[in-house]
Structures are given as C-alpha cells and as structure tokens.
Image 1 (cartoon, rainbow, N blue to C red):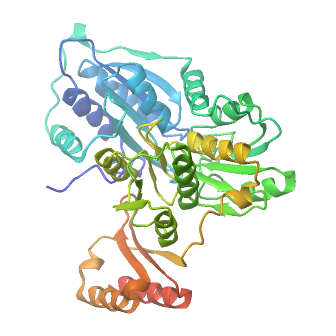
Image 2: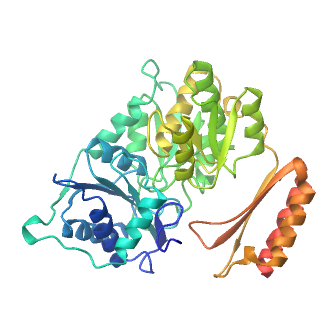
Image 3: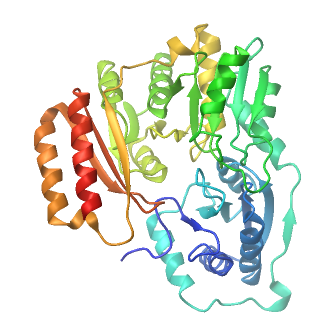
Length: 444
C-alpha cells in the first residue's frame, strides 16, 4: 500500500498547499493521538518546532488535534529535532512531534513523529496513522479534553544533555569556533553549549525572523561560514541545518568537510578506544566509496541503506552498531541519541581535535574521496525512471562503470527531483555518464 502523506522523513511540503495545511496538521494530531492512546493513564505529547513563520499555525492546529482526542500537550517552542526526541523519552510522553522542514526554504514545513522511546515511527505505524486520518476522528467527551502547557527549561535540559556527551576530562579553552545555526532551531542552544564548554564562540544565523531559516546560511549554504572562519582565524566552523539534526564542518582553511569524513573520524576514534560496536558503521547508498575502502583497511564493514536517516537507524539497531549517518551530515551516535544530532556530532569532532592536538585540516581528511558527482533533475509528476529510454541509458552507464565505480539514481523523498549520482576513479567518465542520464531523464 502506497503512502499518501508520509515520505522518507515525515510529512513535508509547501505550507498552505496540500498536504502541508492546518487541516492536515489537525488530522495528524487527532490520528496520531488516537493511535497512541493506550492504557488508562493521562496521555501526553511533546511538540517542538523550528523558526518558520508557519510554525505557529501548524503548532496551533496540532494542539487542537491532540487535545480534541484527549491528549495533553507539552510545548517546547523552537528546539532541535534531537532535543524533541530526547525530551519525549525524558518526559515519559506517549508521542513526540517536530514541526520542521529541515534544510528546506522557509515556505515549506513538515511534521516528524517520534514514539515514546524517542525513535522515529516505523513505516507500519505511519501507515496506521494515515488510515486513521481518512476516518472521522473520535472526539473525547468535553471534561476529558486535553490541556496544553509550555515548559520554560527545555533549552537548559537539552544543553545539559549535549554537554554530557563531551568527555568530562576535556575542555574547549583556547579554541575559537564559528557556529552557523541557519537561523533555525538551534540558534540559542548551540552557541550556549559551546561557550559553556570553554570555547570562544562566533555565532552566525542566530537572528531568525520566520522567513530567513536556511536562507544563505547553515549546512546547505556554508559560504559565509567559510569566510568567517578564515577571516577570524578560527580553529573550526560548524554548520547546522534548520532543525539541527545534520552537521557540516569547515576546517581552519575554509574547506568543507562532509558527513562521510566525519563518520570516518568518529568511527576510527571509537575503534581506537574499543568503543565501536558491531564491526563497522551504517551509511546510505550515497556515501563515498572512499569511506568504504578506508574502513575496510581497518577491518571494518560499511552497510549501506536507502537514503533517509530513519533507515540508517533501523539498520544500526538491527546490527548492533553505534555509528551511522549520511554524507549530507546526519550523524547518528546511538550511544547518545535516537536520531541525528548536529551539535552532539560537532562536540565529538571538537573532542578529537582537543585530544589529538592536531588542526582540523589534518584530522578531518581521513580518506581520499573517490570522484563523485550528483546532479538533480526537476520533474512535474509522472515516472521518468520507468521509461524504457531512461532504463536503457542507465543500463549502459552501469555496464561502462563496471567494478570501477557506482551509480545511484533515485527519486527524492522530499522534493520533486530525480537525483543522479555516479562515482568512480575516472572523473571524466563520471561526469559524462551523469550528464547522459540527466539528459535522458529530462527528455522523458
């Protein structure tokens, strides 16, 4: 059965255009509330959001939905996605909600759901909620309508948690760190946490106005961060996205370091300490072949999943692994968190810099990436990848690459895009094959 609302990372789309409307948000609240009404206790849902203008509307609609079916609501205000997951479990809530479209522009928004254990919901649970959304909600009797309460210490709780993942014997004294919060959910917590650990902090993207989230800043637009790191003589730059569940790093020379290099450093650091579990890491089909080869040199395996941090996490749990993530910067460290956490991942990188006493440019160049090229082709409905003309071109490219590289073509789960990625030891071949496939997709 296909899914009508939920994609690879919850429900997402342009606000006030179906499905991302206040009506849908209220229905999600009613359906998810009904799905998690189990037992006779007073049920509770935790709701966080990023800094988008539409967050007020979506939050209010969801409060109406949840309270109408008898759930109490705890409102966190602007908080990172991992903070919502953590506080859902800590507050003994039955359900957690993050209202965010992550790295998308401000006009988009989204809804992510977490179970009482702090983990994102399974496909099965999301399908069950979708079925409930298609039915008339069972409204609670008036005296049993839920209440809503806003808690004021959520930021402090999350900062305390994030700092607890940093080794007790280390401090950030003497380090100058630039952090770009994307005018998003971490605009207060990330600079404060770094400062409390002793760093000299230069904060960017900390003046959200509802319209500027991810606008020329954050992990998808690190140019200002790069310039600031170099101009200020900083040791490192950290770039978060709108909901702060992903991280991109900039070294002291202004060079970008992606999630693959970060996973390599964290995994090998944990291996040296005897803390890496499961004999390897979990990454997606988009991670660079160079990462796989580097891990192999140390006797470690890299298991690949479909794109989406939820699929990475599912595999990590199944395989008993504690390090996983995506090239885009979703780094999941299951010893600490139940989802990607950009700030926590950044603290592990900073800990390695302090402990080893080496500059970021040396420490973070763990492996030589295999030449990789990713291009996007926008489409307006239809199924271009099912066309025989496209299939033929893809088959020819796979044959030409052979064992010298990899080819990944997929439909985006969050945008109307076909993503075409190829990697191989011959960069000219990679570019030629990607362009050929993109032309075929566009023509179809």
